[in-house]
Length: 83
Image 1: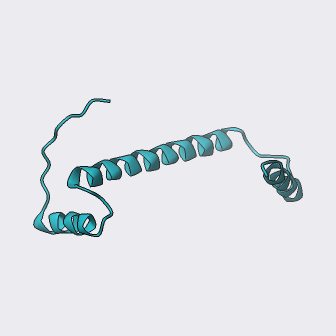
Image 2: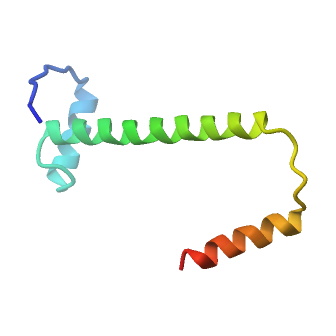
């Protein structure tokens, strides 16, 4: 994976915050912090997209004939099968 150099601008308050995280050992430099934020943003957006797709699929599938008891039993069986 190639590296692309970027120039970004922080406010003094943001810069002080990032520097404090580096001093505390959470990151080794500003770039590492920004890359971590981007990775977390990508993960969150993927989760939102997946959730949105699941909600649409559920709404389009119509009402279920399943009972609450049958739903719980299925969930328990799936959980136990994963152990």
